[in-house]
Length: 461
Image (cartoon, rainbow, N blue to C red):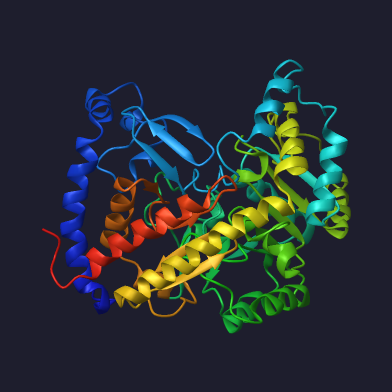
């Protein structure tokens, strides 16, 4: 029984029975993938990245082809993809402008550790699209966040950073913490952790203005690093006025505001920052910004850029600053960024995404209501999530109490067997531009059928 959320207890019992049935169906449909898994190979744990085993599948489906919003596995099963590489392919798999850019750059050189002919255009597009006047390129959002934190420390002369409980900002050491009984501790699941991350990181609840004020009062915090909407601990929306308070308090205490829009880029053109008029000192975007190739961007205000340049020139010695890698800013990245920003990341693209997100949003709310489940749908532009409470959660404590791994797993696998792949761990749904209305409606029907089984008076046989 879910002691934190008794209302889920009956649903969990039915979910457990459903998961058994759906596991058998999944396995019967994928004999080649099963054989490959059992054969073993030279990869650690048998997969290129160990996270690939964390899906709620008995073993990973092995993808043969990904195009648009369709995946076909090596067993011939075709599914509609609403996970999209956990946002990496938010604009669809293999967008035509990216494929053309890849073909073109392949004949002009992929990486030289020098600017390519696309650099000036990309720089202008970044300024125009996201507002901040100075930009840098990195390979991943983890790298961009890591570099941005180092820049914030250099600019402010402070060593601590502040994050919100339940955050996720990639593999950045300082952010891999949990708030436990009021203390910031290294996340218990970390491997090879050598230092106490709580020495340089403060974690507080999201949407808690008083905790934020108290944490910043000492003047030790270089930057607050946050997503505008928390998306990796369920989906936690900012309460009215919270972003205004966050910006005011950071300015009053000389703390930089670093926004990570790697997921909230789904909000609309320019990300949540542009849609809602936020004013970060530093902005990070990763994953989908280059159409699926490894690239991220991080930008800063003119003031931060000036102070960073001053801090750099004040160093007595030359050498690696700890910011940048040799594959950052490559010709490959710049070519794909240019194609993405010019032809994909447009108002028209977001309008297409919003239309199908509207269909799914309305359909899921109706399905939940018809089944009498006390659940809610939370949305950030083209990103939607079903939360197992009757009202939106306001912090990580609420989100953890609302979660149920068994229900999430049953939903995920049952939807996959009905032809729809959603994001693991918290059943997030992401709408890509190629998604057609009949596919959005198909997801709603599948969701309605699965919820009907979970809400029935008798367990699934």
